[in-house]
Amino acid sequence: MSSRDRRANERRQAGKNVSVDRRQQERRLGDRRTTDRVPLELWMEEVSGDDVYFRRTGNVSPGGVFFDRAIPHPLRTAVTLKFALPGDKEMVVARGLVVSAAGAKDGLGMGVKFISIEGDGAKRIRSYIRKG
Image 1 (cartoon, helix red, strand yellow):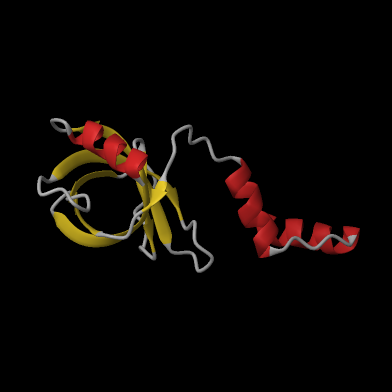
Image 2: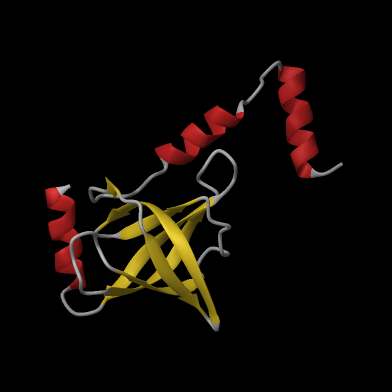
């Protein structure tokens, strides 16, 4: 019997049912973001190793981005992101690490923490968020 099966059996014996929604709430309680984020729907180019992906964002903050409905990479995967903010013609180029996976109800989604942002990209992201 696996440890997962044992825990489920112990919950059944104790009369405790843990819903999927409760598990998701508990994950959110551990949220350590300290910066504001705003909803943002746009396509970002993501480069991971030799692979190139186009991902749809859900929200952005000065510290990172969350991709809705994305099949996530393993945690701590290094990625390079290239995107233009709405109303801005210049591309933002950021390097980041995957820090969360499967945040959406269907198990799809991925959070990337910015490690570095080229040029004045960080300033432009903060400006966009203040306007949002």
